[in-house]
Image 1 (cartoon, helix red, strand yellow):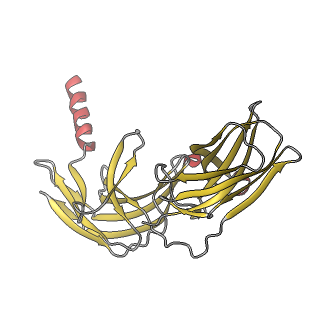
Image 2: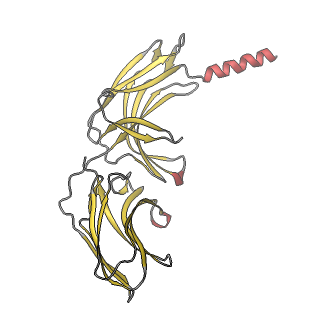
Image 3: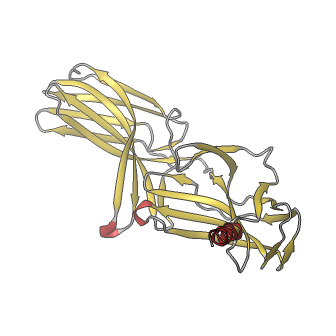
Length: 306
């Protein structure tokens, strides 16, 4: 009886063990630029980098294990664009879904190589790996079977889309203050910045009646998901830049020069497929001698130039 049970167990394991390996290969993998992505386990991986309207082509390789014969209901490859929100764990939305049938039902006895091509693919949104929102593009190859289950392989790739320089890029000018205590005027030379840009500006003290200890400029990213009463926002401080240490006097002007390239920024994303948004802010923070914080936040627009 024990031997029978053992045989039955081995049969079950054998039945559910994948009888082949599937791999997806990009046609121009050797020459194409790569992007570094962070995987769920915290490790990083290199994946090919594309932009909208490019062709995505390559081959699917199916290698049966020695002595295995695979009866199948067809072979296909899909290109999927998906959004996952952590508040709806396990559920992903497909905003793009393209399919190429690669083979009719039949059987595979030894390695089979299937070429595929998706031409001028519309990929309007960039790949994004945020705190609560993820946007990914993936190729999914499937060998259809009636029993025990389909055999599936996935291959991620990354999408970045460049923009042209905005025609209108107004400066930001603002006066802020606390009545009879503090009055400052600040100015940033523009309101739209590319990812490798420099924030240039100045702060002018019109009235100083409180003891300012120091002043800093922060770059903040706000990621919001959901809509209406179910909106959930997460704000991260990506950078802190000290502008001044010590007390300013009336009439003093402090220059600002903040390089954006060292920071891991993305473009501004507004309402991506009605699922999430990513916005950036410059936050001016003043700290007085009693450690009270006064701040003024101003939204800026980020875009990708190259």
